[in-house]
Every structure is written in C-alpha cells, then in structure tokens.
Image 1 (cartoon, rainbow, N blue to C red):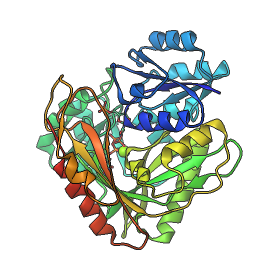
Image 2: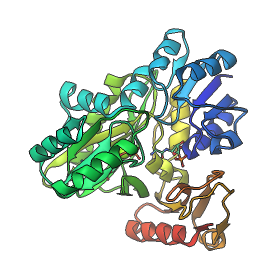
Image 3: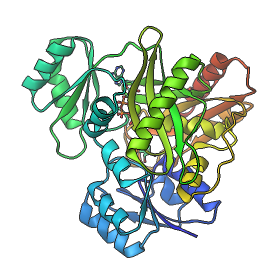
Image 4: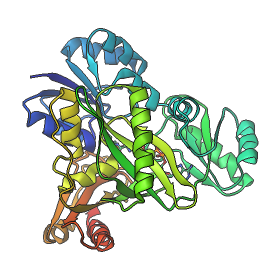
Length: 388
Ligand SMILES: Nc1ncnc2c1ncn2[C@@H]1O[C@H](COP(=O)(O)OP(=O)(O)OP(=O)(O)O)[C@@H](O)[C@H]1O
Ligand SMILES: NCC(=O)N[C@@H]1O[C@H](COP(=O)([O-])[O-])[C@@H](O)[C@H]1O
Ligand SMILES: [Mg+2]
C-alpha cells in the first residue's frame, strides 16, 4: 500500500481517489476549503493553502507520503523539487508540475526548445507592453494571465480599445501576485482536441482516442470521444505529445491540448500533467480504462495491457447560475436518470459561484452511432438540471 498526498480535491481528484482506493491505496486529500469533492471519499484530509510553501512542507512532514499527486495548478511547485530529491515520487515529476503551472515556462519549452507549432505569442508586464504586442499580433487576439486555469482572466480582444479592460481583467484573474500576461494570436481552428497521453515507468507512451471539446469563455462545456480527425493530424498531435511529455519527464496521464485547422494543420496549445476535465467523458465507459484508472496505473507502475475504445461518449457540464455559501440543491435530476445510457455525476461541491462546474452528464452509445445526436442529448439533459 502507498500513501498518496493529493494536492487539490475537486471532481477530478474525487474520481482519482475512487480508482486509488479500489487498488487498496491510502489517500490524504488536500485543498484550500473543507468538504471538497475528493475529501468526501479520501482516508484523511488537510485544509490549507497549497500556494504556501511552508504549510505544504508541514503537511508533507506530518504524513510522510510515498507519492504526491498534484490535482490543480495552484501549488507552490518549486518545493516539489525538494520533496522529489528526498525520494518522494512527484506525479508525473516535479519538473512537469512546475513547468505547466506557468504558461511562460511550458510555452517557451514547447515553441522555442522543442519547435512545436503554437499560436504566435508575446508576454506583457504592463498595459503599454500589451498594446505593443497586440499591434504586432493583430486582432482578434487572446489575452490570458500567466498563471490561471479554466479560462480565469482570459479575454478575446477584437480591437485596441478593449486592451485596457483585458489588462485589468487578466491581472485580477491571475493566481498569485504576478502581473504578467500572455497575448496570443487567435487561431481560427475548425476543432480542438485533448489527446490523453500516458507515460509509463516501464513501457511505451500510450495514447487514448482523441477527445473533441467545446469551450466557452475559456472553460469546457462539452466533450466527446472519439473525435473524428484527419489521421495525419492525429499522428502529428501524437508526435508532439510524445515530445513534450518526454521533455517534461515522469509517469502519469497527461491531457495534451491541440487546435486543428484544415488549412493550417495542428497547433500545440497547452497541457495538464494530470487527468483533464474534458477527459471526464471516459467515465461514460468510452474506453476499457478511464483516465483516472490510467493515471493511477501509470503512477503505481502497474501494467496497462492497452487502451481500447469500447463505445462513443459525450459529456456536458452542469454549471451553477448562482453564487452562494449555502450547500447547493439540485432540481431536475429525474429527467437525466430516466434517460437511457446516461450517467449523472454531481460532484458535491459545498458552495457555488456563478458558472462553477457542479456536475456532469455522461451519455454513451455503440461505436458508429450518430455522434452529433449523442452530443445534443448530453447537452439537453445537462440543461435540465438546475442548481439553486
Ligand atoms: N490562441 C487561441 N486561439 C483560439 N482560441 C484559443 C486560444 N487560446 C485559448 N483559446 C480557447 O480558450 C480555451 C482555453 O484556453 P487555455 O486552455 O489556454 O486556458 P486554461 O485557462 O488553461 O484552461 P484549462 O485550464 O481549462 O485547460 C481553449 O481551449 C480555446 O478554446
Ligand atoms: N480545468 C481544470 C479543472 O477542471 N480542474 C478541476 O476543477 C477543480 C476546481 O474546481 P472549482 O474551481 O469549482 O473549485 C479542480 O480541483 C479539478 O478537479
Ligand atoms: Mg486548456
């Protein structure tokens, strides 16, 4: 049995804990608030700010974990190098977690060192620098904080007079106190995918069938698998995923994000060194092993006999329309549970914010079915669940 310290306890962590406990592991779930989804199913929990390096160190000294599994980006990742040196396994590696928490580190590695195709980009430390960069990139362009996730602080800029607002919005949406943004060329992609990639301690890199997804305001709304993409594009994406995960080192499951354009090919966007929100579609049984089980096996060094697509699936999110410190209630669940070949997962978050993801609807159908109809079904059912 291994002792696993899970840093971040949201919906993705909850499914990981369930997979880990099914293999007899012991989990301490951490997050900045009590009652987080993964804490509800873990052996123990700790509530503290994981951005506080000393607090993080205290928790590590208290529990002596064998393995540290980061589940969010907001962690004092520099400290992970020390824990790794002491012999604690950091998943997938301290380097991977440290590089991906800051868009600058991962983008420079991908574009400059590895030569992967990305959107044109600049960094800006002031509104003046942002204006200068926008003039070079042109409009529309995308502005994001260097440190953020799920679209926080992200804006799509159509003209120069929107830059001032984008600067403020980006700085306010930034995690920590870093006042620096990335400004990117807007890619007119035809579709975007997540390529779940598994790197193993003993064994080759494995790829899941591509997951298509749709984002709004930088946050995921629906995903589906398998996404139909040009085989040459898939090969290109797999090669890029292999390159970037090898450069970051370590074992685990990664969500590697790409933009696909018929005209301009495949662009690397970013990656998560952990299960991906769009990969929740694998909970619909689309694969022989879902993304959480794959992550766990890679982390423990357990064999993975292969990844097989079993059926097609679609996921659609349930968002909160309200902000409240009260425990949320749900209406309309019957409409989902009476539907065939459908699962409802309410994450059990103790409070709401506007647009906070509270649950997901998962629908499946045999391979070869009408994927668009399946996506519509998942979205229509998710819309019937009301958070209040
Ligand atoms: N340069 C771009 N051109 C076109 N669309 C973009 C660009 N950058 C981001 N987007 C859109 O915004 C979405 C979110 O961007 P990104 O993945 O960089 O943000 P994030 O905050 O890290 O999100 P998450 O943590 O949920 O993955 C993308 O999936 C894409 O739909
Ligand atoms: N795109 C990253 C992502 O989906 N992360 C997932 O959302 C949780 C935070 O949710 P919250 O903001 O509602 O607490 C994280 O803990 C993780 O499970
Ligand atoms: Mg993303």
